[in-house]
Image (cartoon, rainbow, N blue to C red; front, side):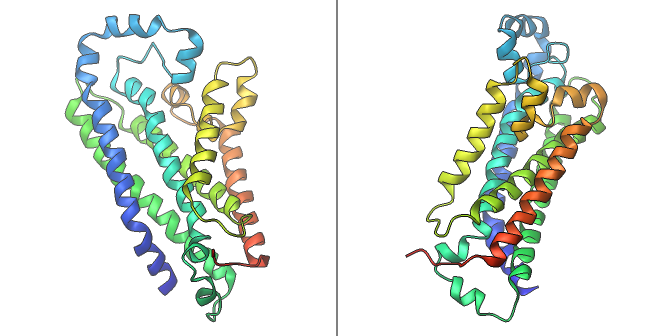
Length: 267
């Protein structure tokens, strides 16, 4: 319990910063909705002039773009990108923090198993993400209600927001699994940004390919398409299963490697 509380306290400051940043992005994007709604046809014509590949990359659905959910789902990918960076940073840092701060020996000589160390850190990180999502969802919902020109489905709004949490869980697990293979990791950001932006660009560039349904499995950013959520009020089962498999395998790999590796302090 003491280890969990320590991890929670050490992570909460960065969580507050990320949460405020995502709320600011949501407020910025939603603030333009009244203008979009008043000039809906011109806005559709403008976006319709974009090549189909560009519209697919940006997640533009011309049939729904003039609605608040349609506009928000288009720009939500940027918010998800921020959330993925936050989760990847958490995943990489929680198992490498002691090495980077040269406190690894102090932690590992305590009468506590390595499995409990990983579990405490993982639970703290997941709860941080849950808190981030709850606060962000509440703020975004209030903002959306403040700028709406007509009623929208609260259920669909929530389903769109849940995709952020799903993607964050995947990147948290990927970050943990990636970090255990580094004996000495001096900085979290290069690894986190490299993986997140690499997978984001892969998903964006391959979004309109001939085998896009198969290629989507490569990038977690394409597992939960807002356009599908709006049309079916649910998620695509194959990608939901794939997300669960990625999380399960990555977490299991993190435990297995961390429990058997030599942990060094960065000199």
